[in-house]
Amino acid sequence: MKGRVLLADDALFMREMIREIIEPDGFEVIGEASDGIEAVEQFRKLQPDIVTMDIVMPRLSGIDAVEQIVQIDPSAKIVMCSALGQEALVMEALKAGASDFVVKPFKPEDVLGTLAKVLEKADE
Amino acid sequence: MDIAKYRNLFLEEATEHLAEMSRSLLALEKEPELREAIEAVFRAAHSIKSMAASLSYDSIRSLAHRLEDRMERVRSAGRLEDPEDLGLLFRGLEALEQMVAVVRESGEAPPDGDAELLAALSGPAATEPDPKKKAHDPAPVARARR
Image (cartoon, rainbow over all chains, first blue to last red):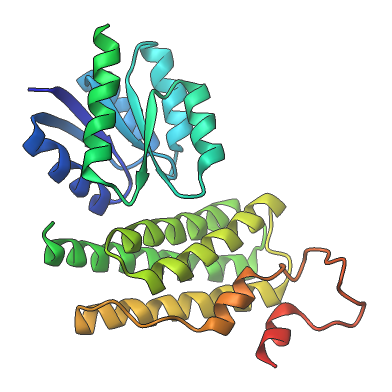
């Protein structure tokens, strides 16, 4: 098993898409969240190895959720899921403590490569 | 990728987002500074754009992207200040609803959208100062309709 993953995205469509990319490659999806507040709660409860985090979500944005998660665990591994044109928000998320990012629409090799890279860095 | 599965998810979620967009635009008509409604319209357009891009529904992606950008400007301004802007956003919503209906009925990507509407959505907001605009220049929507 490559890693236990929490998927945070308000769109079931996107969560399913990531799940279908990563599960056959050996990742285990241990939880899902549909807004930032739920993402923080699920992180606290499940303590995943890595989180995929959408930026634009209701109640609490992905960036604010990153800030709160990093306060809970400064070594948290979080990969932002951004859209084209969100470069400034991605920079903000990286400053807040996110580890890396992938761009929608997802390319399976990018998602898998980024998750593996972030987890490898964590092991160093 | 199981296209039928993702098309169904798209239809389900896009329909919810369009309903939310409609409710929020109606709320903004009464209360142009309503932050929750501004954010809801922005998020709905953003979500529809991302899903459409994943399914190569280029006409939906393009229109939703213009609506998202338009709402980004409203977010920055903190309010929807001009009825012309609201009319334009309602036209965008209606066009998106028609495109989603095409996907529902045919299972195929909708044809290219209304170029005039796309241009109007990309144009300056009616409330933004336009250095080239003269005092009696009509609003962008009216201009684009000529």
